[in-house]
Length: 268
Length: 258
Image 1 (cartoon, each protein chain N blue to C red):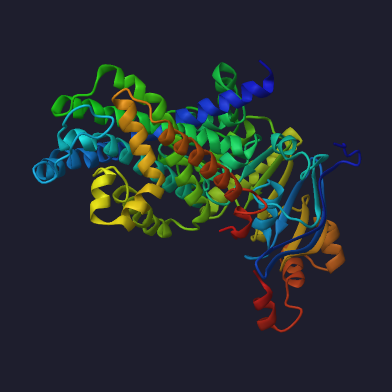
Image 2 (tube, helix red, strand yellow):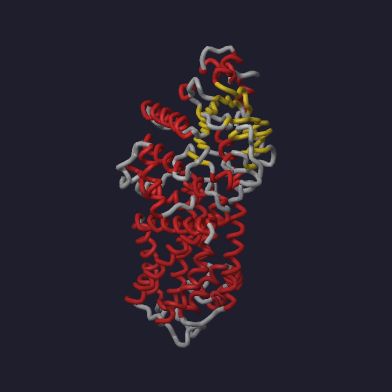
């Protein structure tokens, strides 16, 4: 291995290690990441079970409870929150200066951002699996192999949602502006998707909203996860997720380019 | 890639930079000598931070040239960065990590790991008077020691050039004096090229080099003695006051400042 490739690897390990330490230190963040979907699963879904019947929809072979239906959407929600939270920490890092340390590392900038992205994705995997364990213990039955089959999908979707967060962070100047983005990104993405209700049900209520859901990349994250969890492959959903991940990341790298994005910001 | 033989640490030619309509740097040309402590003195808004951001590649200018230790910054930014230790005006430590963990993280970014990194870290911490404090959280260090840790961190990779952007901001008087002394000593002992931005004249020593930056322009550059002679001033304070005195009406000068 050359000295250069060793440097790349050590840097990646370092960024992951730091993100891991931050994760361990911020126990509240971990608990919040778990409590949020569990409230949906244990309270919201219980209330809605009797109102919303879910008929046989792929990938399910039989009638399922509403709790079973929303588990993949909640897993995706964890990753969505984590992606936005990572970008929040990027904005914070930039204001506090530690992003400067990362960006003045003598490696290509796209690679440094990619390291950040991988580290954030790994943290989101820990959160999703912790949630899945609790969901399995309490209510939902997930096929044993589904736990494994979901992993590659979670990696891709984690990268996509992390890249989206990174892209947003490159356009935000101040921490205060971020709260608005959270509201305008997280909520619409989550509610205008197949996370809480199958799209055909949405179509019965409103064709326009249905079309928006179809255009929402988050729908494909949810569907890719839903199919993988029950050992089915949804190629279309997976392709959309991969493509979005690439586009979001490319735009984020562009946003952090010295000549374009950061150049517009006066130093503090 | 060319190597400078004339001993210039940093060469800047006709550098311009603007934030929208606001000019931050307006035709800056400079030559910083190797192995010297050069103070970049300028009031707030003079363009010091912009100059530092350009030097470390955080932002890039379409006009002008920067050569750092012989490396053209636009062509070989990473080779130049490898030689640089940078201390930003904003604190950049991870306050939740310990002193040792901050060193390890920074070492990893620079490709150092394992025992080699630990050994170097111990050396650098010792040099900055932080030995024995490895397990303390960065948050528990006082302002002066946090700055020292940032400098110790940059020394991990044995840089030839140290860039410090107003590193004494927010420090009390004794910590400030100690840090100024420390970096001067470091410059002499290790033959480091140091570029130190400040708006405080008492941080400049008589044997230093001096650049006076005002409203995005270089008003004077050279050894402190030369600058004093050229301006006919008795001390740096008087020279600084003379060089940054408004040339037009005060109102128009203020409007031009970024």
